[in-house]
Image (cartoon, rainbow, N blue to C red; front, side):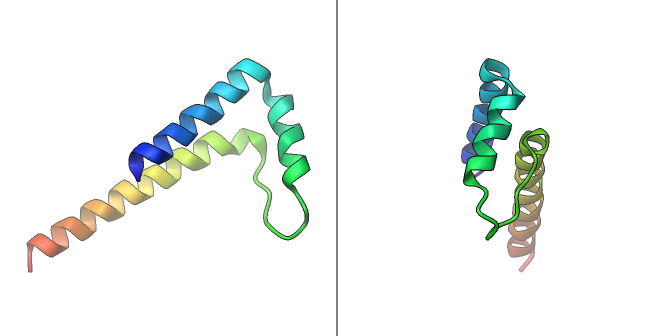
Length: 69
């Protein structure tokens, strides 16, 4: 799971580096239909990073908890 999240984060970084933040903003606006929350293009990479961090932290906690049983 963490490898997938890291891949997505890297992909988003590459899109921004190669095509610019304006491109990412335009693609996000095309997806926005009012039915789901929209994250700003500037927040995408940090959000994927934070999700990976949360999963890694929670996974470690769950793993340690199971070992202590």
